[in-house]
Amino acid sequence: RLRKSEMAVRVQFENSSEVGVFSKLTNTYCLVGIGASASFYSTFEGELGESIPVVPITIAGCRIVGRMCIGNRHGLLVPSSTTDHELQHIRNALPDEVQIRRVEERLSALGNVISCNDYVALAHPDLDRETEEILADVMKVEVFRHTIADNVLVGSYCVFSNQGGLVHPQTPVTDQDELSSLLQVPLMAGTINRGSSVLGAGMVVNDWSAFCGLATTSTELSVVESVFKLGDLGQSAVAGALRTSLVESMT
Image (cartoon, rainbow, N blue to C red; front, side):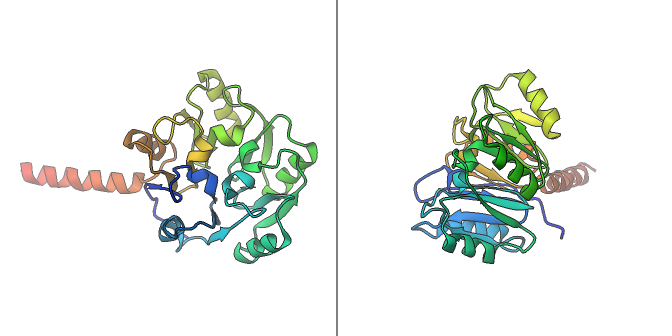
């Protein structure tokens, strides 16, 4: 199904700009933490509702679903603390082709220790071998153990889609090049939420849309739109229309 490429959208969860803490976005579904105010959910539903299911959930009774689980269009991994009831609710709401698996992992905040797109995953160097195998099997990805700017929490310090990626601002250029060739997507070092380097907590992205914290500056937003190739279609159309009208007014 053809989708229009969206612009990046600013949003906040109750009073927090840590959007990536309370949501998980992929190309086939979006999970959001159940909050006291409906505006967070309705922003996602308004942008994505026609394309993919937007599902309000908890994991182990917590709303910080973006940090607890890891997923892509093929699958979703949740920690062993997820209740049977929560698991059933997620299963019922997600498309049938998405595999869901509970994993026994000491590093149970899976969203902090793994970052992935639909083809490749970066993982914490100490991730359990069995978890790595499940990750590769369920999510159909190639797994690389790595650090980002000497941080082991790869899920917190980088975000990437199938189009591009954003990494910790202090990632050396040599590391950026190495990561870029591993992931096969262009990377850029940057910040979110007015200078925060914790990118995974500050934003979520898929191949056609991004949601950033309300504190994100317009410069940061334009970097996000550029590296993730968002809104290009719209912008080039607008630029084309402007150019046409300019030429007409001059002739």
